[in-house]
Amino acid sequence: MVNILMLSKWHVHAKDYAKTIGEQPDARITCVWDEDAARGAAWAKELGVPFEPDLEKALAREDVDAVVVDTPTTMHRKVMVKAAQAGKHIFTEKALATTLEDCYAIERAVQEAGVKFCISFPQLTSPLAQLCKSAIENGLLGQVHLLRYRMAHDGALAGWLPDYWYLPQDAGGGAMMDLGCHPMYMASYLLGKPARVASVFNNSVAPHGVDDNAVSVVEFENKAIAVLETGFISPFDAGCFELLGTQGAITRIGQDIKMRTADRKEWFTPDLPAPMPSAMRLFLDGVQRGTPIPFGMERAIALTELLENAYKSDRLQAIVRVAGD
Image: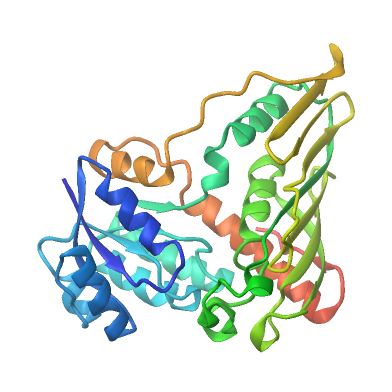
């Protein structure tokens, strides 16, 4: 049994992770901590577990093996370093951090403590992601040269996101830092190491001037280009996805996935691979059985590398060259 400390209900998906944990036969929530004591106490009461307002005391509890991090993104370095130093395994909502400097500090703490780490990248568990990865690795598409991925919703336009979601000192950014993570980590997963980034972000209705309509164009070292789009003002988003190669392609509009390959010139509906287990399930298995956790520190840092350079490009209004290793 993995005993889990929930670190904050700030993130809009925190309650979903709590629900997922409750559905697992080998995990349970034993405590809640929150930077907002009133919110944390109310959530702990709802979950039927103790609330501990002191982070160090919460991490020192004997009935805590692991933490689920849903704090403001800009607090991730603080809470994860402390969690690792306390010997607790870490599951976190994306993004790992808003800067590579913070990512590397978390990475050092995790490595020194020898704890397990997993970041939630739900789109990578999808049949679409597995289809694309397999097609690329097996050369079915030829040389992949373009990825276009749009993920957007109307959260700011319709007002269903919490007001604090738009505070840059907590969230680290707007639509690209939140929803745009999904296209960003998909691009990294499929295309590899980025070389250059160009961004145009703007603000229409979201409070505090954060980006609510955003596009980044990324050139990768293999010369593929990704056009990554997101927003909080799109009630009619079609969820467009295109992966184009010199000999084939995979596309999706809504839930309709089509494919063509070198030996099948006409578009067809592919047989989809099974989805991977959820990131939470992969994390729990990794903690208890030592099985691989595919969404680990390397993938987490790759996302922040894209995000940090994307925001830098928009801020400077210039094409930004990504620093080498």
